[in-house]
Length: 193
Image (tube, rainbow, N blue to C red; front, side, top):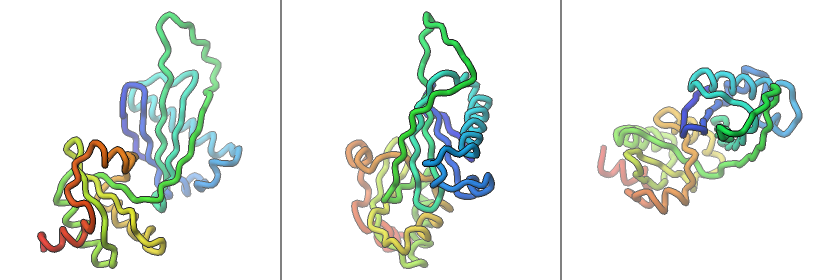
């Protein structure tokens, strides 16, 4: 489980498939009223509360992004309480949950060198294509045309070099800078042998 603070009242939690498996859960269990899932969620909130010194009380919104083979990302938004309001904390947390699946593989990288090494590794598995973007001093590789049979393998390889991104491809297209619009792996291999 990996935690990251996005804003003052928003936290991102990345759970791998192994994290879920260790707790006896699967991604499908989120649809069930499972006591294991509720326990996991409360454990995550407690860890996030300690890690970031956030008092998580009252109402939280939870967005869950199911990632192909890697697990899931949860974005937890804590409703801000105005100082003049009284908050009666009764030990319960109200959740609004939205689940989204990701058809495309979108990964974030800190260094261009990671993209070069990744491209070499993907080519060994006959996985090609992709679009490369830069935004806020980070690199993003969008693999939107990976064959279904190769998707899990591609996700595993991408995870070795980068982190899954929750950005939308539309946000990247609008605000990011397109470096290579198509055939990223092939282009990188051509220029960086």
